Image 1 (tube, rainbow over the protein chains, first blue to last red):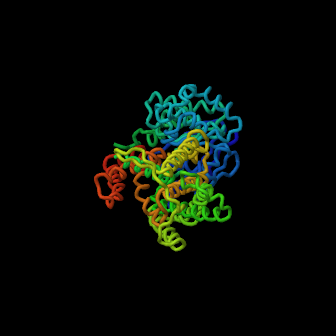
Image 2: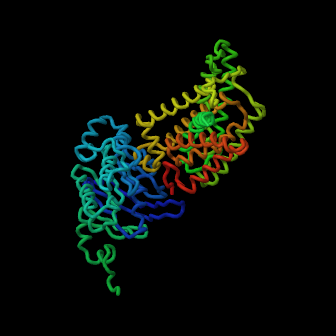
Image 3: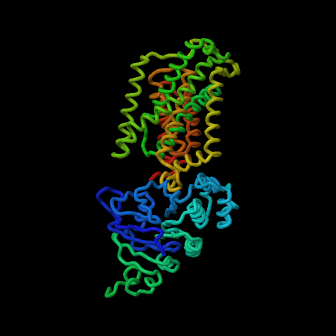
Length: 241
Length: 304
Protein backbone atom coordinates (compact mmCIF):
# COMPACT_ATOMS: atom_id res chain seq x y z
CA UNK A 1 0.00 0.00 0.00
CA UNK A 2 1.22 3.51 -0.76
CA UNK A 3 1.40 6.32 1.80
CA UNK A 4 -1.39 8.86 1.40
CA UNK A 5 0.49 11.31 3.56
CA UNK A 6 4.09 11.34 4.72
CA UNK A 7 5.85 13.70 7.12
CA UNK A 8 9.64 13.84 6.82
CA UNK A 9 11.85 15.43 9.48
CA UNK A 10 9.34 18.10 10.43
CA UNK A 11 10.39 20.94 12.68
CA UNK A 12 7.62 23.41 13.46
CA UNK A 13 6.50 25.84 16.12
CA UNK A 14 4.55 29.01 16.75
CA UNK A 15 7.67 31.11 17.43
CA UNK A 16 10.66 31.31 15.12
CA UNK A 17 13.74 29.41 16.41
CA UNK A 18 11.64 27.76 19.11
CA UNK A 19 10.38 24.55 17.50
CA UNK A 20 7.81 22.46 19.31
CA UNK A 21 8.21 19.58 16.86
CA UNK A 22 11.71 18.20 16.32
CA UNK A 23 12.44 15.84 13.47
CA UNK A 24 9.01 14.25 13.44
CA UNK A 25 8.48 11.51 10.87
CA UNK A 26 5.15 9.92 10.10
CA UNK A 27 3.50 7.98 7.34
CA UNK A 28 -0.17 7.03 6.91
CA UNK A 29 -1.35 4.38 4.47
CA UNK A 30 -4.25 5.11 2.15
CA UNK A 31 -7.71 4.39 3.60
CA UNK A 32 -6.33 3.77 7.07
CA UNK A 33 -6.79 5.41 10.45
CA UNK A 34 -3.59 6.51 12.14
CA UNK A 35 -3.77 7.66 15.75
CA UNK A 36 -1.27 10.14 17.14
CA UNK A 37 -1.12 9.95 20.91
CA UNK A 38 1.12 11.20 23.66
CA UNK A 39 1.13 13.20 26.89
CA UNK A 40 -0.08 16.79 27.14
CA UNK A 41 2.37 19.17 25.50
CA UNK A 42 3.81 16.44 23.29
CA UNK A 43 3.10 18.48 20.17
CA UNK A 44 0.25 16.35 18.77
CA UNK A 45 -2.07 19.25 17.94
CA UNK A 46 0.87 21.32 16.69
CA UNK A 47 1.75 18.48 14.31
CA UNK A 48 -1.79 18.36 12.91
CA UNK A 49 -1.91 22.15 12.57
CA UNK A 50 1.50 22.22 10.88
CA UNK A 51 0.32 19.64 8.35
CA UNK A 52 -2.83 21.75 7.75
CA UNK A 53 -0.68 24.84 7.11
CA UNK A 54 -1.73 26.68 10.27
CA UNK A 55 1.66 26.49 12.02
CA UNK A 56 4.86 27.46 10.17
CA UNK A 57 7.15 24.56 9.28
CA UNK A 58 10.80 25.55 9.67
CA UNK A 59 12.21 22.38 8.15
CA UNK A 60 11.10 19.05 6.81
CA UNK A 61 8.40 18.16 4.30
CA UNK A 62 4.75 17.20 4.12
CA UNK A 63 4.01 14.94 1.16
CA UNK A 64 0.39 14.38 0.12
CA UNK A 65 0.22 11.54 -2.40
CA UNK A 66 3.89 12.22 -3.06
CA UNK A 67 3.32 15.94 -3.70
CA UNK A 68 5.16 18.38 -1.45
CA UNK A 69 2.54 20.58 0.23
CA UNK A 70 4.82 22.11 2.88
CA UNK A 71 4.05 25.77 3.52
CA UNK A 72 0.91 25.85 1.39
CA UNK A 73 -1.79 28.15 2.76
CA UNK A 74 -4.60 26.46 4.75
CA UNK A 75 -7.27 27.65 2.31
CA UNK A 76 -5.47 25.87 -0.54
CA UNK A 77 -5.40 22.48 1.22
CA UNK A 78 -9.03 21.53 0.43
CA UNK A 79 -8.65 21.50 -3.36
CA UNK A 80 -5.44 19.48 -2.93
CA UNK A 81 -7.37 16.80 -1.04
CA UNK A 82 -6.60 17.53 2.60
CA UNK A 83 -9.14 18.60 5.22
CA UNK A 84 -8.75 19.46 8.87
CA UNK A 85 -11.26 19.20 11.72
CA UNK A 86 -10.05 21.40 14.61
CA UNK A 87 -10.48 20.30 18.21
CA UNK A 88 -12.75 23.13 19.31
CA UNK A 89 -14.59 25.90 17.46
CA UNK A 90 -14.74 23.65 14.42
CA UNK A 91 -18.04 25.00 13.08
CA UNK A 92 -19.32 28.54 12.51
CA UNK A 93 -21.80 28.82 15.36
CA UNK A 94 -23.48 31.99 14.09
CA UNK A 95 -24.12 30.52 10.65
CA UNK A 96 -26.94 28.05 10.02
CA UNK A 97 -26.12 24.46 9.12
CA UNK A 98 -27.07 25.21 5.49
CA UNK A 99 -24.74 28.25 5.48
CA UNK A 100 -21.87 26.28 7.03
CA UNK A 101 -22.18 23.66 4.30
CA UNK A 102 -22.74 26.22 1.52
CA UNK A 103 -19.51 27.94 2.56
CA UNK A 104 -17.35 24.84 2.18
CA UNK A 105 -19.21 23.70 -0.94
CA UNK A 106 -19.01 27.00 -2.78
CA UNK A 107 -16.23 25.87 -5.11
CA UNK A 108 -17.42 22.29 -5.47
CA UNK A 109 -18.77 21.88 -9.04
CA UNK A 110 -21.57 19.36 -8.30
CA UNK A 111 -22.67 21.19 -5.17
CA UNK A 112 -26.22 19.84 -4.93
CA UNK A 113 -25.33 16.20 -5.41
CA UNK A 114 -22.49 16.51 -2.90
CA UNK A 115 -24.89 18.06 -0.40
CA UNK A 116 -27.27 15.12 -0.86
CA UNK A 117 -24.39 12.68 -0.32
CA UNK A 118 -23.49 14.46 2.93
CA UNK A 119 -27.12 14.37 4.11
CA UNK A 120 -27.24 10.64 3.35
CA UNK A 121 -24.13 10.25 5.49
CA UNK A 122 -25.38 12.53 8.28
CA UNK A 123 -29.22 12.47 8.18
CA UNK A 124 -29.73 14.59 11.35
CA UNK A 125 -28.13 17.58 9.59
CA UNK A 126 -30.75 17.57 6.83
CA UNK A 127 -33.50 18.05 9.41
CA UNK A 128 -31.88 21.12 10.98
CA UNK A 129 -30.74 23.06 7.93
CA UNK A 130 -32.05 26.42 9.08
CA UNK A 131 -30.92 26.02 12.70
CA UNK A 132 -27.91 27.93 13.89
CA UNK A 133 -24.94 25.60 14.18
CA UNK A 134 -24.37 26.91 17.71
CA UNK A 135 -27.64 25.32 18.80
CA UNK A 136 -26.45 21.79 17.95
CA UNK A 137 -25.47 19.25 20.61
CA UNK A 138 -21.79 18.29 21.01
CA UNK A 139 -22.14 15.15 18.91
CA UNK A 140 -24.10 16.93 16.19
CA UNK A 141 -21.46 19.67 16.08
CA UNK A 142 -18.77 17.07 15.45
CA UNK A 143 -21.02 15.57 12.79
CA UNK A 144 -21.30 18.96 11.06
CA UNK A 145 -17.55 19.55 11.42
CA UNK A 146 -16.81 16.20 9.78
CA UNK A 147 -19.41 16.87 7.06
CA UNK A 148 -17.70 20.22 6.34
CA UNK A 149 -14.32 18.48 6.18
CA UNK A 150 -15.67 15.87 3.77
CA UNK A 151 -17.43 18.39 1.51
CA UNK A 152 -14.53 18.72 -0.92
CA UNK A 153 -14.06 14.92 -1.13
CA UNK A 154 -10.63 14.93 0.55
CA UNK A 155 -8.28 11.98 0.42
CA UNK A 156 -6.86 12.79 3.85
CA UNK A 157 -8.75 14.12 6.89
CA UNK A 158 -6.88 15.44 9.94
CA UNK A 159 -8.92 15.26 13.16
CA UNK A 160 -7.76 16.97 16.33
CA UNK A 161 -9.28 15.34 19.42
CA UNK A 162 -12.78 14.89 17.97
CA UNK A 163 -14.02 13.27 21.21
CA UNK A 164 -12.96 16.17 23.45
CA UNK A 165 -15.76 17.39 25.69
CA UNK A 166 -18.21 14.68 24.60
CA UNK A 167 -19.92 12.06 26.76
CA UNK A 168 -18.27 8.59 26.58
CA UNK A 169 -21.13 7.26 24.43
CA UNK A 170 -20.99 10.14 21.91
CA UNK A 171 -17.18 10.07 21.97
CA UNK A 172 -17.27 6.38 20.99
CA UNK A 173 -19.73 7.19 18.18
CA UNK A 174 -17.49 9.99 16.87
CA UNK A 175 -14.47 7.68 16.84
CA UNK A 176 -16.54 5.03 15.04
CA UNK A 177 -17.49 7.72 12.52
CA UNK A 178 -13.78 8.46 12.01
CA UNK A 179 -13.21 4.74 11.49
CA UNK A 180 -16.07 4.50 8.99
CA UNK A 181 -14.46 7.15 6.80
CA UNK A 182 -11.66 4.73 5.95
CA UNK A 183 -14.19 2.37 4.33
CA UNK A 184 -14.92 5.21 1.91
CA UNK A 185 -11.26 5.41 0.94
CA UNK A 186 -10.43 8.35 3.22
CA UNK A 187 -7.15 8.38 5.14
CA UNK A 188 -7.66 9.65 8.68
CA UNK A 189 -4.97 11.12 10.91
CA UNK A 190 -6.39 11.35 14.40
CA UNK A 191 -4.98 13.09 17.46
CA UNK A 192 -6.65 11.80 20.62
CA UNK A 193 -6.39 12.04 24.37
CA UNK A 194 -8.91 9.24 24.67
CA UNK A 195 -6.06 6.83 24.02
CA UNK A 196 -7.51 3.39 24.52
CA UNK A 197 -10.67 4.13 22.51
CA UNK A 198 -8.58 5.68 19.75
CA UNK A 199 -6.30 2.66 19.57
CA UNK A 200 -9.28 0.34 19.31
CA UNK A 201 -10.42 2.03 16.08
CA UNK A 202 -6.95 2.84 14.67
CA UNK A 203 -4.84 0.76 12.27
CA UNK A 204 -1.54 2.34 13.18
CA UNK A 205 -0.30 4.50 16.01
CA UNK A 206 2.45 7.04 16.58
CA UNK A 207 3.40 8.08 20.09
CA UNK A 208 4.84 11.57 20.42
CA UNK A 209 6.55 13.03 23.50
CA UNK A 210 8.41 16.31 23.84
CA UNK A 211 7.86 17.01 20.16
CA UNK A 212 9.61 13.86 18.97
CA UNK A 213 8.67 10.41 17.70
CA UNK A 214 8.90 7.87 20.51
CA UNK A 215 7.20 4.68 19.42
CA UNK A 216 5.11 3.65 16.45
CA UNK A 217 3.50 0.46 15.26
CA UNK A 218 0.21 -1.29 14.65
CA UNK A 219 -2.41 0.09 17.02
CA UNK A 220 -3.40 -3.36 18.29
CA UNK A 221 0.21 -4.20 19.12
CA UNK A 222 0.71 -0.93 20.98
CA UNK A 223 -2.51 -1.44 22.90
CA UNK A 224 -1.35 -4.91 23.90
CA UNK A 225 2.25 -3.95 24.75
CA UNK A 226 2.50 -3.84 28.56
CA UNK A 227 5.63 -1.67 28.61
CA UNK A 228 4.21 0.95 26.23
CA UNK A 229 0.96 0.77 28.16
CA UNK A 230 2.73 1.45 31.44
CA UNK A 231 4.60 4.45 30.07
CA UNK A 232 2.21 6.06 27.63
CA UNK A 233 -1.29 4.72 28.14
CA UNK A 234 -1.91 5.75 31.72
CA UNK A 235 -0.43 2.73 33.50
CA UNK A 236 2.23 2.90 36.19
CA UNK A 237 5.88 3.15 35.27
CA UNK A 238 7.75 -0.12 35.84
CA UNK A 239 9.44 0.13 39.21
CA UNK A 240 7.46 3.14 40.31
CA UNK A 241 6.17 3.13 43.88
CA UNK B 1 -38.24 64.65 23.34
CA UNK B 2 -39.53 63.51 19.92
CA UNK B 3 -37.24 65.99 18.16
CA UNK B 4 -34.24 64.71 20.16
CA UNK B 5 -35.24 61.13 19.37
CA UNK B 6 -35.50 61.91 15.64
CA UNK B 7 -32.13 63.65 15.62
CA UNK B 8 -30.65 60.74 17.57
CA UNK B 9 -32.00 58.18 15.09
CA UNK B 10 -30.50 60.15 12.21
CA UNK B 11 -27.10 60.42 13.90
CA UNK B 12 -27.40 56.77 14.85
CA UNK B 13 -27.84 55.75 11.21
CA UNK B 14 -24.61 57.56 10.28
CA UNK B 15 -22.74 56.03 13.25
CA UNK B 16 -24.07 52.55 12.38
CA UNK B 17 -22.75 52.80 8.81
CA UNK B 18 -19.34 53.80 10.15
CA UNK B 19 -19.32 51.09 12.81
CA UNK B 20 -20.11 48.17 10.46
CA UNK B 21 -16.65 48.19 8.87
CA UNK B 22 -14.86 49.00 12.12
CA UNK B 23 -16.35 46.04 13.97
CA UNK B 24 -15.28 43.65 11.19
CA UNK B 25 -11.78 45.13 10.93
CA UNK B 26 -11.29 45.14 14.70
CA UNK B 27 -12.40 41.53 15.03
CA UNK B 28 -10.50 40.24 12.03
CA UNK B 29 -7.23 42.08 12.61
CA UNK B 30 -7.50 42.20 16.43
CA UNK B 31 -6.55 45.82 16.90
CA UNK B 32 -8.29 49.08 17.75
CA UNK B 33 -7.95 51.14 14.59
CA UNK B 34 -8.08 54.78 15.61
CA UNK B 35 -7.65 55.87 12.00
CA UNK B 36 -10.88 54.19 10.93
CA UNK B 37 -13.19 57.17 11.48
CA UNK B 38 -10.99 59.26 9.17
CA UNK B 39 -12.46 57.21 6.33
CA UNK B 40 -15.68 59.19 6.88
CA UNK B 41 -13.74 62.38 6.22
CA UNK B 42 -11.96 60.94 3.17
CA UNK B 43 -15.32 59.91 1.74
CA UNK B 44 -17.02 63.23 2.49
CA UNK B 45 -14.21 65.29 0.92
CA UNK B 46 -13.81 62.97 -2.06
CA UNK B 47 -17.53 63.45 -2.74
CA UNK B 48 -17.09 67.23 -2.45
CA UNK B 49 -14.32 67.22 -5.06
CA UNK B 50 -16.23 65.07 -7.55
CA UNK B 51 -19.51 66.90 -6.91
CA UNK B 52 -17.87 70.20 -7.87
CA UNK B 53 -16.11 68.56 -10.82
CA UNK B 54 -19.25 66.92 -12.24
CA UNK B 55 -21.32 70.08 -11.69
CA UNK B 56 -18.66 72.14 -13.48
CA UNK B 57 -18.41 69.73 -16.41
CA UNK B 58 -22.17 69.22 -16.79
CA UNK B 59 -24.02 72.09 -15.04
CA UNK B 60 -27.37 70.31 -15.34
CA UNK B 61 -26.09 67.63 -12.96
CA UNK B 62 -25.72 70.25 -10.24
CA UNK B 63 -29.44 70.94 -10.04
CA UNK B 64 -30.90 69.76 -6.75
CA UNK B 65 -33.72 67.20 -6.56
CA UNK B 66 -36.15 69.46 -4.73
CA UNK B 67 -37.03 69.49 -1.86
CA UNK B 68 -33.64 67.86 -1.20
CA UNK B 69 -30.34 69.70 -1.58
CA UNK B 70 -28.98 66.49 -3.10
CA UNK B 71 -28.14 66.72 -6.80
CA UNK B 72 -27.29 64.19 -9.50
CA UNK B 73 -23.66 65.31 -9.38
CA UNK B 74 -23.48 64.64 -5.62
CA UNK B 75 -25.19 61.26 -6.07
CA UNK B 76 -22.60 60.21 -8.65
CA UNK B 77 -19.83 61.76 -6.56
CA UNK B 78 -20.96 59.77 -3.51
CA UNK B 79 -20.83 56.49 -5.42
CA UNK B 80 -17.36 57.37 -6.70
CA UNK B 81 -16.28 58.49 -3.21
CA UNK B 82 -17.41 55.15 -1.77
CA UNK B 83 -15.22 53.31 -4.27
CA UNK B 84 -12.26 55.65 -3.73
CA UNK B 85 -12.52 55.49 0.06
CA UNK B 86 -12.76 51.71 -0.05
CA UNK B 87 -9.68 51.61 -2.27
CA UNK B 88 -7.92 54.08 0.06
CA UNK B 89 -8.64 51.79 3.03
CA UNK B 90 -7.17 48.83 1.14
CA UNK B 91 -4.14 50.94 0.18
CA UNK B 92 -3.56 52.16 3.75
CA UNK B 93 -3.72 48.58 4.99
CA UNK B 94 -1.32 47.41 2.30
CA UNK B 95 1.13 50.29 2.83
CA UNK B 96 1.09 50.41 6.63
CA UNK B 97 -0.95 47.96 8.67
CA UNK B 98 -0.11 44.81 6.69
CA UNK B 99 3.60 45.47 7.08
CA UNK B 100 3.29 46.17 10.80
CA UNK B 101 1.16 43.10 11.58
CA UNK B 102 3.75 40.94 9.83
CA UNK B 103 6.47 42.12 12.20
CA UNK B 104 4.93 43.57 15.35
CA UNK B 105 2.12 43.14 17.86
CA UNK B 106 -1.36 44.67 18.11
CA UNK B 107 -0.14 47.55 20.28
CA UNK B 108 2.18 48.72 17.50
CA UNK B 109 -0.80 48.65 15.15
CA UNK B 110 -2.78 50.86 17.55
CA UNK B 111 0.04 53.42 17.70
CA UNK B 112 0.39 53.29 13.92
CA UNK B 113 -3.34 53.93 13.56
CA UNK B 114 -2.98 57.12 15.63
CA UNK B 115 -0.26 58.23 13.23
CA UNK B 116 -2.34 57.38 10.17
CA UNK B 117 -5.29 59.34 11.60
CA UNK B 118 -3.10 62.40 12.16
CA UNK B 119 -1.67 62.21 8.65
CA UNK B 120 -5.10 61.90 7.01
CA UNK B 121 -6.59 64.76 9.07
CA UNK B 122 -3.68 67.08 8.40
CA UNK B 123 -3.54 66.32 4.68
CA UNK B 124 -7.26 67.14 4.45
CA UNK B 125 -6.69 70.38 6.39
CA UNK B 126 -3.75 71.26 4.13
CA UNK B 127 -5.76 70.73 0.96
CA UNK B 128 -9.20 72.02 1.98
CA UNK B 129 -8.43 74.38 4.87
CA UNK B 130 -9.89 74.59 8.36
CA UNK B 131 -13.18 76.20 7.36
CA UNK B 132 -16.42 74.29 7.28
CA UNK B 133 -17.84 73.65 3.82
CA UNK B 134 -21.22 72.67 2.40
CA UNK B 135 -22.13 70.49 -0.56
CA UNK B 136 -24.85 72.92 -1.52
CA UNK B 137 -25.22 76.62 -0.76
CA UNK B 138 -29.01 76.21 -1.00
CA UNK B 139 -30.89 76.60 2.25
CA UNK B 140 -32.65 73.42 3.24
CA UNK B 141 -35.96 74.34 4.83
CA UNK B 142 -37.28 72.04 7.52
CA UNK B 143 -40.78 70.62 7.41
CA UNK B 144 -42.91 71.07 10.51
CA UNK B 145 -44.21 67.64 11.54
CA UNK B 146 -45.83 68.89 14.71
CA UNK B 147 -46.30 72.24 16.41
CA UNK B 148 -46.88 70.97 19.95
CA UNK B 149 -44.43 69.56 20.66
CA UNK B 150 -42.43 71.24 17.92
CA UNK B 151 -40.94 68.60 15.63
CA UNK B 152 -38.97 69.68 12.58
CA UNK B 153 -37.37 67.48 9.95
CA UNK B 154 -35.42 68.37 6.84
CA UNK B 155 -36.09 66.43 3.63
CA UNK B 156 -32.34 65.71 3.47
CA UNK B 157 -32.56 64.05 6.88
CA UNK B 158 -35.37 61.77 5.72
CA UNK B 159 -33.36 60.90 2.62
CA UNK B 160 -30.22 60.20 4.66
CA UNK B 161 -32.10 57.92 7.05
CA UNK B 162 -33.75 56.04 4.18
CA UNK B 163 -30.48 55.74 2.25
CA UNK B 164 -28.55 54.56 5.32
CA UNK B 165 -31.21 51.94 6.10
CA UNK B 166 -31.21 50.86 2.43
CA UNK B 167 -27.42 50.40 2.49
CA UNK B 168 -27.65 48.38 5.70
CA UNK B 169 -30.46 46.27 4.20
CA UNK B 170 -28.38 45.68 1.06
CA UNK B 171 -25.41 44.61 3.18
CA UNK B 172 -27.72 42.34 5.20
CA UNK B 173 -28.81 40.65 1.95
CA UNK B 174 -25.17 40.15 0.97
CA UNK B 175 -24.35 38.68 4.39
CA UNK B 176 -27.30 36.30 4.54
CA UNK B 177 -27.95 35.34 0.91
CA UNK B 178 -24.54 34.98 -0.74
CA UNK B 179 -21.62 32.64 -0.15
CA UNK B 180 -19.41 35.75 -0.15
CA UNK B 181 -21.51 36.98 2.80
CA UNK B 182 -21.19 33.61 4.54
CA UNK B 183 -17.42 33.86 4.06
CA UNK B 184 -17.39 37.38 5.54
CA UNK B 185 -19.36 36.22 8.57
CA UNK B 186 -17.18 33.13 8.89
CA UNK B 187 -14.00 35.22 8.90
CA UNK B 188 -15.55 37.61 11.43
CA UNK B 189 -16.41 34.69 13.71
CA UNK B 190 -13.31 32.53 13.40
CA UNK B 191 -10.56 33.57 10.95
CA UNK B 192 -8.49 30.40 11.44
CA UNK B 193 -11.45 28.09 10.81
CA UNK B 194 -12.48 30.19 7.83
CA UNK B 195 -9.07 29.53 6.29
CA UNK B 196 -9.49 25.83 6.92
CA UNK B 197 -12.89 26.08 5.20
CA UNK B 198 -11.12 27.39 2.10
CA UNK B 199 -11.53 31.13 2.58
CA UNK B 200 -8.47 33.16 1.59
CA UNK B 201 -7.89 35.52 4.50
CA UNK B 202 -5.98 38.21 2.61
CA UNK B 203 -8.81 38.50 0.07
CA UNK B 204 -11.40 38.81 2.81
CA UNK B 205 -9.31 41.41 4.67
CA UNK B 206 -9.18 43.49 1.48
CA UNK B 207 -12.93 42.98 0.99
CA UNK B 208 -13.66 44.13 4.53
CA UNK B 209 -11.55 47.26 4.07
CA UNK B 210 -13.27 47.92 0.76
CA UNK B 211 -16.79 47.47 2.15
CA UNK B 212 -15.98 49.28 5.41
CA UNK B 213 -14.40 52.15 3.49
CA UNK B 214 -17.37 52.39 1.15
CA UNK B 215 -19.93 52.42 3.96
CA UNK B 216 -17.84 54.93 5.93
CA UNK B 217 -17.69 57.20 2.89
CA UNK B 218 -21.49 57.06 2.64
CA UNK B 219 -21.71 57.86 6.36
CA UNK B 220 -19.39 60.84 5.90
CA UNK B 221 -21.39 62.18 2.94
CA UNK B 222 -24.70 61.64 4.76
CA UNK B 223 -23.44 63.52 7.81
CA UNK B 224 -22.01 66.35 5.72
CA UNK B 225 -25.24 66.58 3.69
CA UNK B 226 -27.30 67.27 6.81
CA UNK B 227 -24.60 69.25 8.65
CA UNK B 228 -21.31 70.43 7.15
CA UNK B 229 -17.84 69.21 6.21
CA UNK B 230 -14.78 69.94 8.28
CA UNK B 231 -11.40 68.21 8.60
CA UNK B 232 -12.46 67.20 12.15
CA UNK B 233 -15.41 65.18 10.80
CA UNK B 234 -13.59 61.86 11.23
CA UNK B 235 -12.18 62.82 14.61
CA UNK B 236 -15.65 63.84 15.83
CA UNK B 237 -17.05 60.43 14.88
CA UNK B 238 -14.17 58.45 16.39
CA UNK B 239 -15.71 57.98 19.84
CA UNK B 240 -19.31 57.38 18.68
CA UNK B 241 -18.19 54.78 16.14
CA UNK B 242 -16.01 53.02 18.71
CA UNK B 243 -18.82 53.17 21.28
CA UNK B 244 -21.24 51.61 18.77
CA UNK B 245 -18.74 48.83 18.03
CA UNK B 246 -18.17 48.09 21.72
CA UNK B 247 -21.87 48.28 22.61
CA UNK B 248 -22.77 45.90 19.79
CA UNK B 249 -19.89 43.56 20.51
CA UNK B 250 -16.71 43.49 18.48
CA UNK B 251 -17.21 41.33 15.40
CA UNK B 252 -20.99 41.59 15.28
CA UNK B 253 -22.26 43.54 12.26
CA UNK B 254 -25.80 43.60 13.59
CA UNK B 255 -24.48 44.60 16.99
CA UNK B 256 -22.69 47.54 15.36
CA UNK B 257 -25.91 48.66 13.66
CA UNK B 258 -27.86 48.44 16.92
CA UNK B 259 -24.96 50.02 18.84
CA UNK B 260 -24.90 52.93 16.38
CA UNK B 261 -28.57 53.67 16.97
CA UNK B 262 -28.18 53.28 20.76
CA UNK B 263 -25.26 55.74 20.82
CA UNK B 264 -27.01 58.16 18.46
CA UNK B 265 -30.31 58.12 20.34
CA UNK B 266 -28.62 58.31 23.75
CA UNK B 267 -26.57 61.30 22.59
CA UNK B 268 -29.69 62.93 21.14
CA UNK B 269 -31.75 62.40 24.27
CA UNK B 270 -28.92 63.54 26.53
CA UNK B 271 -29.38 67.04 25.07
CA UNK B 272 -32.59 67.25 27.06
CA UNK B 273 -30.76 66.99 30.38
CA UNK B 274 -27.17 68.02 29.61
CA UNK B 275 -25.64 71.20 28.19
CA UNK B 276 -24.65 70.58 24.56
CA UNK B 277 -20.96 70.81 25.46
CA UNK B 278 -21.25 67.60 27.46
CA UNK B 279 -22.98 65.57 24.73
CA UNK B 280 -19.70 64.33 23.16
CA UNK B 281 -18.99 62.64 26.51
CA UNK B 282 -22.08 60.44 26.13
CA UNK B 283 -20.30 57.76 24.02
CA UNK B 284 -17.63 57.58 26.76
CA UNK B 285 -20.31 56.94 29.38
CA UNK B 286 -21.90 54.30 27.17
CA UNK B 287 -18.55 52.57 26.61
CA UNK B 288 -17.88 52.58 30.37
CA UNK B 289 -21.37 51.32 31.18
CA UNK B 290 -21.20 48.49 28.64
CA UNK B 291 -17.70 47.43 29.65
CA UNK B 292 -18.80 47.25 33.29
CA UNK B 293 -22.03 45.33 32.70
CA UNK B 294 -21.34 43.31 29.58
CA UNK B 295 -17.64 43.44 28.62
CA UNK B 296 -18.17 41.65 25.30
CA UNK B 297 -21.02 43.92 24.21
CA UNK B 298 -24.57 42.95 23.32
CA UNK B 299 -23.70 40.38 20.66
CA UNK B 300 -19.94 40.00 21.08
CA UNK B 301 -17.86 37.17 22.45
CA UNK B 302 -14.57 36.81 24.27
CA UNK B 303 -11.75 37.19 21.75
CA UNK B 304 -9.17 35.54 24.02
